[in-house]
Length: 195
Length: 195
DNA sequence: AACGTTCTTGACCGAATGGTCAAGTGCTCG
DNA sequence: CGAGCACTTGACCATTCGGTCAAGAACGTT
Image (cartoon, rainbow over all chains, first blue to last red; front, side):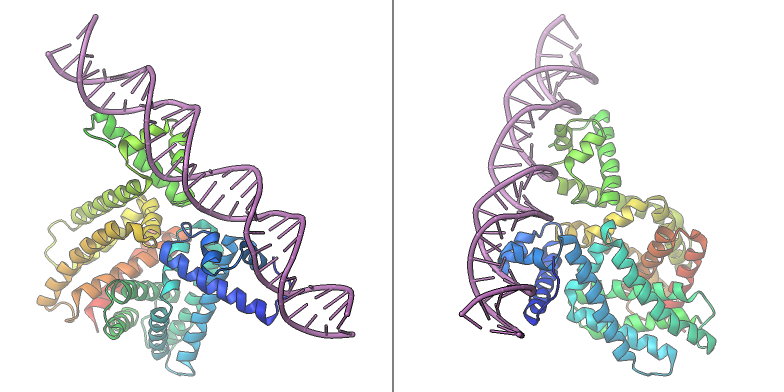
């Protein structure tokens, strides 16, 4: 278990997390052993347990930090756009782009959702994401731009539709991302605006 | 490995599958050992390997047969409804209801999607589901009831939105299913109809 | 009753696995 | 230079896992 980290230590930690994330995404969390991780990095096993107290903690940290990164990207893409509906559209586009660049986390989020042990982290991530989207939706409702419905529910529906489209078209079928993004935006905006 | 099954054999097989599905959903696939399954059923380990050649084959069979059951339910719910948009709505309602009754398969589908080994079965299931929905959407487009867009993409978006809403509201938050179903139907129908 | 088939038992096996630790290396700063 | 802390090593451990198999029980058919 770590205490203070020098720059060297921080770099190792990052390296372990990024590499482990790739292995977990490729072969799965359980089938990837701690030995696999350290051996492919050509370091001793003790290195792993210097930085993380368990394999479980490692994945939790990966989930937490990667979601922070996604969120940063969304906020950056939205900037100070005043139109709430446009903000949602920009958020959707940024999210799909981010997953395209960080494919491995898509699989990881999905796996973690099926394992109770990671429910706490994942739940926190999810709640933040929904709250972010719901804020814009609420504002859009106030502005009379979308029909008055439960904003959190609309946010969930948007997340679900976008994730599904990303998985199938961008990851599984390797189709160009643009068409998928347009379909996602169109479906979601029509979905929330309501005729 | 089995050859011919008597009624007794078929019952055992079902029992193993249902029980294993519950354990997998509760504790996860990898953390649930074959010993766990047979011990809690109070039978010898050989019983398991008489009906299934491996733990992997067991889950594949669970995924395959449970999806068949879901599909049967959808078709039954749709009946001979002539309006394609209404058929989609009936399909959405039937799906959410089925998952409510068979919660365990929701977790299982999700886990399997994160493990390459189950990609073949899951892909087949998914393709069938999308093709089913896309047929109705295509017909709705021909009838001029919905905007002319890629039917498969719309089908994916519907599946994604409904699954996400079901997971969060029905499973995680235990809210009454009706409101969720209404939100899902409203969002999806507006999403495909297009302004 | 007797015979072949279906089904069940549970000890056993080799191959991991997550995690520990005593010993050592190398960096930094006084 | 030398002390102290950050980091690294890799053999080792207890445990567990998926899967096998020789032996036998239960069943159905004649």
